[in-house]
Image 1 (cartoon, one colour):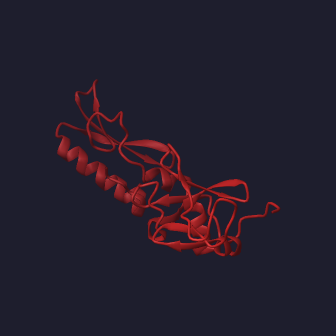
Image 2: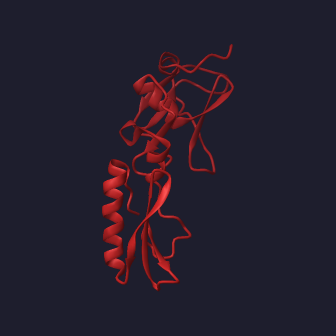
Length: 163
């Protein structure tokens, strides 16, 4: 079969969508009608092979439902393998980065709050327009956490993730 551009029509002709997963509607070699698609990558994303080309499953599912592919698609709950359409939304690169989980290197256990060795207090920093902005230095970690949450809510809106 010739390589073709991935379209909503093609995807809907090949797959049936059910509860965040795609199932084959056609027989293709070892693949039979009704087989679940995709293989889990070590990155946490599901991948699908279509006409000898590999695609991220969440992008195929988004196209299946919306008929277009945005540059970025955000998993609302942060789970890369939860491809239910209700969990996928169009995003900018910045919005997608706002919805990241707490980094493993974070020492406070609170997103956007770090210990300042020089001030010997908790410092709040939140990403805004590709720059980290300081929202103050606090003795009390609970107050620093509240400030971080408020800043994310204000500047990240629906894409704010607090853990």
